[in-house]
Image (tube, rainbow, N blue to C red; front, side):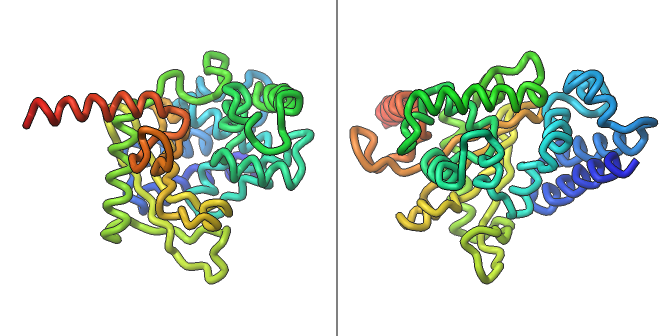
Length: 292
């Protein structure tokens, strides 16, 4: 069963890369156990998926919701974004062009404007209004893309997951900002493993630091933004993409930047959660005053 072997190979490669990059051992082991499960199946995993959907994959030993969705992504698209990210070979613009109505220019504009690199994160942006802010998109085109994404993702998304396909809850801005601080501190100290991104890296140098860390029940992966806009604006060492995973390995993402305007100017903020960041800094100021 060649396809089963290809999927288990991808799961093991992800585990190996995560281990080399210092990820949580339990997360590493989860992918290896899932690969063992696929290896020992007595029928093609595609048959299970075609007959029972993601729920059928989730029911397999050592799989779980997030890994089931990853396997579904591989079966439907032939790609696995998370693995490509770990390799440093992720090309979001190509992925976005798989959505009906999104051509090369819109794929580029959307990726650069929103800092998202998965179809599920793109769907979240279509639901919360961010997609309409992309030049040339607007409400009508965003609605059409939203419908197309829903059709594409309905076979990947477990039934109990939110339309955004991110975990039902999200880490606090305190956790996200702590991860951002840890990443930038360790990246500056050159104490993190690095990967060689495929984009904007003609010499193939391993320059992009990657952090895997944990806060509360959340697993995090943090990397500098490697987009054309980040390079153009010289923000590659300011914009930090933080991916977060719950206990089921279901993924979400946020971008942390230095705010340039308004009352939070000069502060690190989580894009899309500026109000919560304002509350966080206000509480931090209160705590510091009390301690003083």
